[in-house]
Length: 402
Image 1: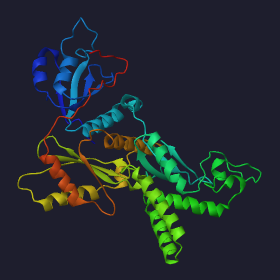
Image 2 (image 1 turned 120 degrees about the vertical axis):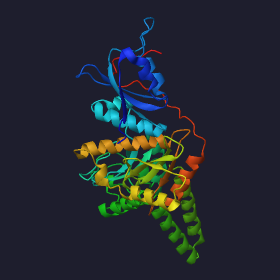
Image 3 (image 1 turned 45 degrees about the vertical axis):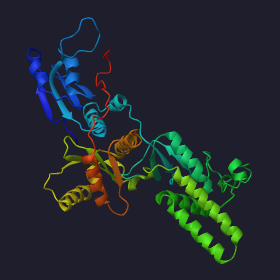
Image 4 (image 1 turned 90 degrees about the horizontal axis):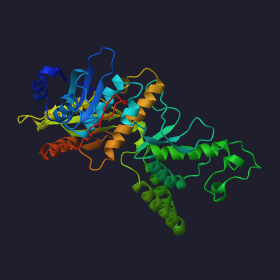
């Protein structure tokens, strides 16, 4: 995925020619050392030529700025047309060449999600950054919902929608002891109180299933139940109860308004991110299937292309991706960690301000016409160079002073 597709050998004696062949464009670059056993140096930059001139040019004895002129043997690089493409390229290269410390290099922190721990006899909903998956790479051991921009935003959303259910929020081990005093939520009748046998196991399971259905359907299951209850109350001329249920619907709407559009059941997080390509006729399509980022596809729009052929190309790309193709790790622990990192990459882009590019989600099917209209908007928009901060790469023991 996103290989470094260009390269040049570096010879200090002919550095002027070397620098002239480099593009003055954003990109990711890997600098290989003269010594075969030495680690390479990975960077991402807004201007490859300027950055490498600074790193590989003649050293300035008056400064302590990092200089790799005597270190470098060869450079491999990839031009990147967007901040998202650059971040993803850097992530993939760092993961490949520095598997033990790429997370520190990028300051990767798995995305915050909500989990309903179904393996527990009395499940509760809580925020976590750890997603357990099965051998097929699918979330396992509970219902996962997200991702969220931060742990705080996940907790804020959970605090609101949990008021609609009577599932426990405590972290204690449930022993069903009638002498247990309970907690504030049980006293306020906001919890079924399994801690002191305030309900049966079957009653608690019913409430948990309502909660899981709420998350699985983005609140639609609860909305349907409330609307049916309100309609029955109206038919029975119980207008007081109908008004009470209507207030519940208003509260549900308020809760869902605070939900991020990106947040949904993790295995249902299917989307495509559109980014500008390297020229004025190319769009990069980055598919997300079940929260995992697939191999991107770069679609070139020629003047003679027909809309139907472009739609067919997009259809072939999106429908040709399977979860098995996305699973490129050896065990479920690695798969869960990688899924959390992919969700972090998507979340970081989605909540960036300003956010370049567009995203389209798949519900029952892919919105192909809307995707093509999004491509048209990106192609017609004025192309601007994304703000991409230079990042010093692999050798964390070295410092570059500007």
